[in-house]
Structure formats: structure tokens, C-alpha cells
Image (tube, rainbow over all chains, first blue to last red; front, side, top):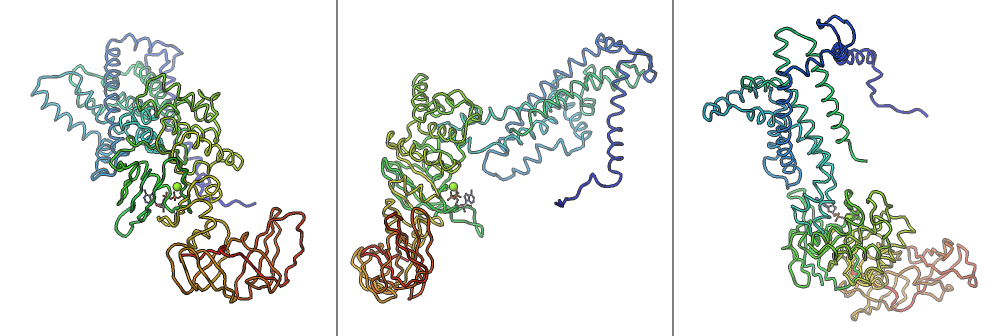
Length: 268
Length: 357
Ligand SMILES: Nc1ncnc2c1ncn2[C@@H]1O[C@H](COP(=O)(O)OP(=O)(O)OP(=O)(O)O)[C@@H](O)[C@H]1O
Ligand SMILES: [Mg+2]
């Protein structure tokens, strides 16, 4: 029996070549980076044998330690704040009667995805320096707030997707069984929303963890995060230590992103 | 007693406005098994949702024992629903599902436990109390949904086609079980279905709906034997429609003349014409065949269809149209009638029903 097929992009001539080329460009550098992070040599480009030397060196580097702690603190606090805000925003855009300006609100929440990051960075630098002058506070909160702001859409989208995929009659059934709106949320909506919330929080964490542009603009002296520290190092002598740190970051990100996909896959 | 007073629901506005309910009036009595019956899209679910509080009517009033229901939020109404899709909470066990309403009412913990136990027994699900709701069969889910809605002892239980997802055998069992639960608990059941047989076997009274309006309310017998309108007669069971002339009418008793010229006494629905051309409805099993020259409507037998339990005789009437007579089969009455034979259709006085339209 002849089967009618739709447009099949994989049958176009050259498809396989282009696809393989893309994958090579994407992953070959990363594979090389990972391999060279285990290099014994002081040179970045010359292989001299397997060793954990640069991992040890990175672990013992006090600047790296401080930057790591700072990165984790910022990413944790920012993703927490962003996720809380995102849950509220997602509820307001899915669980209310349609209200005026709902589409606008949706666009505003997702603004960080649209506006060039460097613009946001300059704007924040300008804004925060005014506050710094006014209050004299120079702590980590500027970075936390800035990170939280651009992480919101990443936390918002999975939560909203989960809410939209949820069966509304479950919430009606709860209301029918004498649950007040707050009880409906706590006992029925929230338990089912958890995977979406966790997924959003993890995505926000990863996004915050590897931000360079906004951090570079907003940070005060001595507030390097891991990525900005690495950037600073590159300007000086490049040591394979960078490879080791990058590989470690890669592992953390991959684990979190895999967990994200696991949590946000549709329920069977 | 639930009183639904001129409830109208219009969805949308302007050119897209759609009248899902059109001035629905009905009074449902305490302890009644009341059924809303009608074709898909006629507004049954919408009417239930108005009572449960998920749809605000555009106009009209709904009262329960005189109290205004529309003023109350869904969670304040002593009305529970068995949803068409069951809507069991997937993150809770069977027992937790059943106890949810009681817990939300703030009942003491041991009372919740006791009532859940009773409910599990009532729907025969005690062994599965700790299962997840995704780990039980469709029929079992249906019973959990029922137990969950019954546990808080609502004054009224709304059931939206609760049996439609079940296979035939289970459906029959659950029909009996629902009847048993209703009489054991004494709760008013408002049951939605588009299955006429289900409605006839289970209900104390039936409201037949079409296009957002209630066409007739009555006991299953009333509705079946004395349909008031063509829609009702057509929707429930099989019916022969005959053109006739109304000679006189006195309350429910009407004298009509058939197209063959024969006169017969029939029942008349309330309202409708006082004289002139009317439609007479006769159920196939309420009529019989007679030798030619004896019955009311002479004609020619065109088809004889054997169905096991009964036989359908199709008669082409001399006056025009076709009439079906259904006769129960018994081994001692294996009379042979062949297509082509001349016969007459007959039916007794007060068997025919003069329709309103
Ligand atoms: N929220 C809504 N917005 C617009 N139209 C609606 C809405 N809800 C229902 N309707 C319309 O109202 C009509 C009645 O719907 P309803 O769900 O009450 O039908 P029903 O009798 O329960 O049908 P079924 O037997 O198929 O469940 C339908 O034509 C439906 O399309
Ligand atoms: Mg329906």
C-alpha cells in the first residue's frame, strides 16, 4: 500500500551533510575543551598526558572558591525570587477571567527575552549607580535583583505551560467539595504544579549561573562570579585551569537541564 | 426542593451570542431521581453547571429550599457533582479523594476516617482504599467519584453522564447501584444522560430538553406513553406519526378522524390546537394488525422483520404513509404473514396521543 508522505526535510539533498556539520561545530569544541581539561601540560593547546592537575589547581585557587560561592549564592537567591514571581504571573495570566492588558502583561513578563541583554545591562548599571549614591549600599543584592529580573521569563514559561496543560475540572471538583479558592490552590493546583515550578527554578538557576553581560556591568569591584572571573583570566595568561572550571560548569548545567526536561515532560 | 426559575444563559455577545439555556423552568423535589435527557449540545451540562455554581446564568433564579443558590460561591453550595470525566485528584489515594470534601468542611479527623470507611463500603471499594486513582479501572474510578461526591452528604447530587464511559455490562450494574445509593441515602439526584433507555429505567421524573429549553417533564411512563410534542415522541423510542383531524377535545380526551375516515378516541397533550389538523403519535407496540376490513387503517404489508424478541410489521397505508406494528414473539403465536398481504392497523381508544405541534 502506497503511503502518502508530507514534506520530509530529511530527504532533501545535502541534509545529512549540513546536519553533521552543525553538530560538529556545536560539539567538537566542547569535546576538545573537556579533553584538554585533563591535560598535564601548562600550555592550552599542547597535549602532554592525562592528569587532574588543573582541577586540583582550580579547587585550591581562593579566587575561584570565592567566585563559585558568590555565583551559587546569587543563582540560588535569584532563581528563588524569580520563581516566586513567575508562579504569581503565571496564575494571573491563566487562572483569571481574561482581563484588559493581559497580553501586554505577558509581553512585559517576557521582556528579557526580547530586549538585547546589553541594553538591560546598561540600564541597570545606570539605575543601580543612582541607588548606590543615594544609599551607599554596595552589596550583593544588586546582582541578585538583576539576575532575578532576567530569570523570570525562564521560570515563567514552564510554570505557565504546566498550568495550561492542567485539567481545570480538577480545580472545579475541589471547589465543588467545599474548598475555598486558597485551599483549591494549596491542595490541588500547587501539588500538580510542583514539577513545573522545579523545572522553572532549575532553568532560572542555570541561566543565572552563566550570565556574563549583565553581571559584568552591574558588579562592584571584588564581586566576580565564576563566568566573569573566567573572562578576566582570559585577558591575562590563559591556563588550562579555565578548561577545568568550564568542564565543571558544563557538568552542573547538563545535569540541571536534564532534570528540567525530565520534570517538564508531559505526564503520561 | 430545587426551583429553577426562568434560567437563561447566553454565551458570548453580539453576533456570536449563543443561547445555551432559554428560560428553563423546573422544580425538582426532595429525594427525587430526576433526569435531564436530551441530545448532545442541548444545554444539559450548562444547566448542571448553573446549579453547581460554575456558570452564572444571564437571567433567572435558582433556589434550594427557598434559599438563593446563585448568591453562593461553588464551595458554599450544599450541592456536589460527579463530573463526566470523574475529575479524581491524581495526587491523592482513593481514600484521600473520598475524604477531601469532609476535610474541607473541617470535620474532625476520626469522623472523616469513619465516613470514608462507610463510603468505601457503600461503593464496594474498601480493598482499594490506598491505591492511586490512576491505578484503578474506569468503573472503579466512577465509583470513587460517586463516593467522593456523596461523602459530605450534599442535599443535592449532580451527575453529568457518569456512566457514559463504561461498557455495557458495567453500565447496567452501575445503573442499579446508583438507584440503590439514591434510595439508601435519600439524597436528591439530578442525573444527566442522552441515553433514553437509561433515563426511562432509572428516573422518578424526566425532563426532556432540546435546544436549551425543556420540552416536557413527566414520569418515564408519562413521557413514553404520552409524549406532548413531536420532538419528544421522536427522541424517545419509535413512533408512528399520523395526520388526523381533531373533531372535539375535552381536557385530555380527544376525538379524532384518521385519514382513512375512521374516528377514534385519543389523548390530547396540554395546550395545542382545539380543532383542525393535528398529528397523532402511536407507539409501534401499542398497535396491532387486524384482518382487512376490521381495523382503523387498511393497507398492504410491505415488510416483516424478525428481531428475536419481537417482529416488526411494516404496513403501507392506503391513505398514504407507512405504519410500523411491533409484536412480541411467543412460540405459540407463530402466525405466518407474508409481505404483500392486505391487512389493517388497529389500536384501542386512548392509545393514540394528539401532539401539541
Ligand atoms: N463556555 C461556553 N462558551 C460558549 N458556548 C458554550 C460554552 N459552554 C457550552 N456552550 C455551548 O452551549 C451548548 C450547550 O452545551 P452543553 O455542554 O450544556 O451541552 P450538553 O447538553 O451537555 O451536551 P453533551 O450531551 O454533548 O454533553 C453547546 O452548543 C455548547 O457549544
Ligand atoms: Mg454535557
